[in-house]
Each structure stands twice: as structure tokens, then as C-alpha cells.
Length: 263
Ligand SMILES: NC(=O)c1ccc[n+]([C@@H]2O[C@H](COP(=O)([O-])OP(=O)(O)OC[C@H]3O[C@@H](n4cnc5c(N)ncnc54)[C@H](OP(=O)(O)O)[C@@H]3O)[C@@H](O)[C@H]2O)c1
Image (cartoon, rainbow, N blue to C red):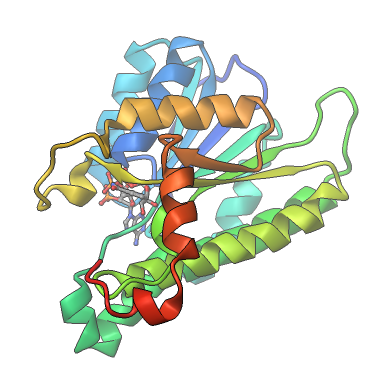
């Protein structure tokens, strides 16, 4: 069941929609929009956290902040939620940040845990995107407003399966392929799709992992890269930039060698 929690008077046109709005990277990105006076629609599953994020964005200058409470695994509620996003102004951007990093070892011994990881990281987003893409095709494009952009956070983990996290990697890899097809489809009706592939980010998702070293990025850096890529009409973003080259090397290692490595 989706619950609308608040809806203040919107001043800015074409709101920015943020799924997984309580993600650390989503918060960093939303703060930038708030400081510019944007209207935001936030979707999340944790009521107190979502309210705190919304309050923070209002204080920072958002024209309006609307919050929708929904666990992304409640598939039956997705069509109504997507429909409600179009009730006022047609949103300009749809960001998808939700995801979870499963315990790979635990998943190896449990299909239930594996399924949950695949649902959170892949299937639930596919469900939202199925309804969203259909809605975008249904609303005829008005030249005065332009097309919308869908921005989905995948991961470099989806570029190649590794023994240490292939359940998460497989979910993100499937998501990346789905987004390629969606981009191809929506191009015909002038809507864009941006696939974001971050490396390691210092967020609550990675709270249990030892951090440090040049490969770790802060949420604000990743958020700013995402915003720039969305503004620039990019299709695929590796963030920080050097991950594109790291993954080029990782993808080029022959499988006969790769299977012997501990990655
Ligand atoms: N951190 C990294 O190193 C890293 C690297 C590559 C890609 N990514 C991706 O970046 C994105 C943002 O993650 P983050 O690093 O900012 O981590 P985060 O702060 O833990 O954010 C994860 C978000 O997903 C939400 N979520 C999880 N399960 C959900 C469900 N069933 N329904 C609705 N929302 C759900 C969380 O909600 P709650 O706040 O309620 O828990 C939270 O908003 C994710 O897609 C992640 O896979 C992260």
C-alpha cells in the first residue's frame, strides 16, 4: 500500500522524482536540486527517514517536496504510484537509487536471500520502469516541455561476475542490459535513459566494509557526476571516471585466467 504523506504547494514546474530517496547518494543529489529551488517527489520505504530527508530539503530551498511511502517489493502498488506521479506536472527526471548489497556467502546457501537480492536490485526496478515507460509513451510529447530522462543506478559489479559478489553483480548486470533495451525503445519517443555505474561509495550500504584508498568515493562526488551526466544527455556513466578503465581491464581478462583469481 502506498501512502501519500505530505504535499506542499508546488511552485517549480516539472518535478524531479527520486526513488530510493533515503539513499546517501540520493540525498546528496536531492540537496543540489533543493538549493536550486526545484520541486521534488521522494519515494522511500522508511517513514521517519523519508520525512527527515524531506524536511532537510525544504529547509535547503526546495519549492515543494512530496513524499510517497512505498516498499519497492509491493509490486501491486506500482501502477498507481507511477500514475500519481503524472497527476500534476509531468516530471522531467526520474532517478532510481534503491538497491541492497546482499551477503554473498549467505546467498550461496539460500535461494530466498538470492531472490530477495534480485528482487530489490533488479525486478522491482523493472516493474517500476515497465509502468513508467508505458506512461511516458502514452503522454504525447509537447515540444514546449521536452522529453523526460530516466536515470538508474546500476554498478560496475554488473560488468563481470565475480566469486565474491556475483548475486549482486548478476542483478546489476541484468539491470544494465534492461536499460540498454529501454533506451533503444524510448529514444523513438524522445525520452532518455542514463545508466550509472559507480565503483565503491562510502555510504550506509558499505558501512560494514573496510574503507580507505583512492578507489572509494564520497556520495557527493558521485551525485555531482550523476547530475552532470543527466544534464549533458549522457547514456552511460562510470563514476568516478577511472572505473571505466578499471572495468575495461577486468572485462578483457580471459575466462580461463579470471576463474583462478580471487576478486
Ligand atoms: N555504495 C556503493 O559502494 C555502491 C556501489 C555501486 C552501486 N551502488 C548503488 O548505488 C545505489 C544507492 O546506494 P547507496 O550506496 O546510496 O546505499 P544506501 O544509502 O544504502 O541506499 C540504498 C537505498 O535503497 C533503498 N532500499 C533498499 N531496499 C528497498 C526496498 N525494498 N524498497 C525501497 N527501497 C529500498 C534504501 O532504503 P532505506 O533507507 O529504507 O534502507 C536506500 O534508500 C544502489 O542502487 C546501490 O546498489 C552503490
